Image 1 (cartoon, rainbow, N blue to C red):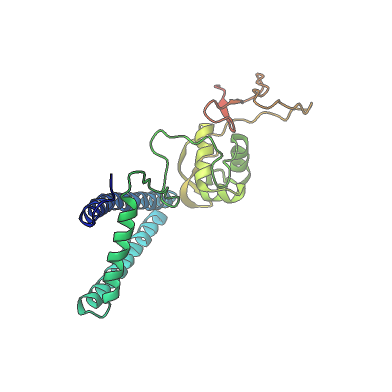
Image 2: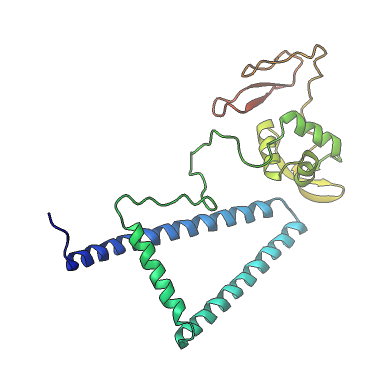
Length: 247
């Protein structure tokens, strides 16, 4: 079969650009949606760490930031449109058209695969990573209970616990959930916020005088004097599960 004629090449290039444009549009929409979801989740998490007057103040800050960003985006978009329409920035329109055409042509090939967006990508529902999570580790149940008793009055805020344990409030929440401790509205030093109550803490086991060492992957010594027992996490071999004893 001979080489395609000029007309055939133009037709194939047009089809490839059309296909690539659809792919680039879908990729841009998906990336924008993931970024918006991440921003929304972070804002909701930051807002959920507070309560009462602090919650109202944080909500006001978020609304103010949203209004400022909206005005900035609208002003920049209007200024760019005015310059393009007047012909002062003709190069911007042609440059954007050429860049989009090249990107669409490259995305129109049959073996094209979108690159993973590391900034906006997130695991889908039901996905579980076997690697260690990025950032500070979650404190153990014993560390969390000890921290509440050490800094609580008698209750402890999540932010205070995170600072004491040198971790984040998200990790403190994970540790509280693993230990079966509810995160609720509490007062610490007369200030209301979300945290862990100090009057519902389980008793900790006394230190082992023999200093015994548990082998890797083996359950800890689960005698009747312990308030909890640990067992390997079947879903993540790098972690252990804490099981509190009833009673």
